[in-house]
Image (cartoon, rainbow, N blue to C red; front, side, top):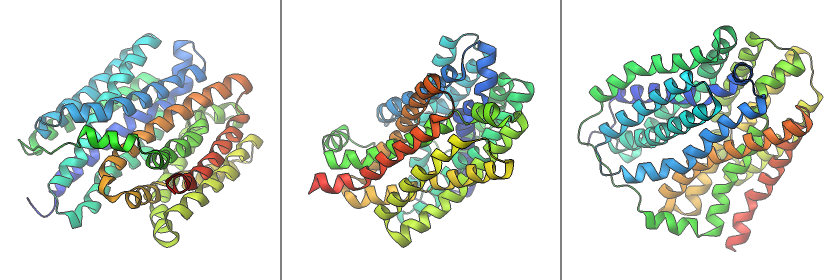
Length: 384
């Protein structure tokens, strides 16, 4: 085994994760044009995010497990190819049912690709260097929030939502060929045993700790899923301004990732998560008072995003500390919990939007954040 995975391979897998991230979350910036084209409400169009997130959470651990004995190059190529085909089907869909089915397929491809890509670089890298290369591989997903989603939103509002999805396909096609050429043939790794997974699933304090991710992000997605139509309706933003707002949100996510690691090291994991939960509970209800002056609105979005995406380093550190032996299982479940939170938050946001319009979204999201605050300390009490 080499000391570190080849930089060219790490860069390729990071770029592929960028395409995965853009294809997964670009729907958030396309809700209005997509809803108008299919003659549905933005809340109903938001179900697409719910379908994708739930499908990812359910299918990812299952598909990764049943393909564990197949060469990693074949799995990566098949998974990425499936993701691209699914996005092409989404761009061609003429009905809600076809669009939902294509998003399910996209989630299956992404749910195989991203964890296996991490396993490949980890398997090619010595333990003391794995953190750096794993961070580099996952950087593509973060960058998709900064560049991919706003770019897709701009294209969607300017040329239509279908061209935005075709861009995902076109960006990914050369990467598919490179994956087959650059990933070493014959790579395999030992998947986590289903028995280990079962042991964690029946341990209450560990599942409560994992559940924090779903609740915290669920509060974020109550509002984030419908941010584009909210800004269009309440702030009067056009497509260009909505794209700029999503770019600001993405920049906040990058800052949050960096800040969160420093907070976890300096303050400790539990204290960091508690502070961030309270911050979300205080910030999100401020969206009820929109419209603001444009600079104030952008500042609010930036601060909200920073606090909303600062939690991951602290959460992962807490899970590892709770059970170092079961850390791989806990981290895998934590990845699934991200999408469970996105799904539940999107679904709850849709209910709130249908019942009360855009105003209550931030208030409800803030209430969910308070529940997340309670969950920071629940695992310790249950385990006692």
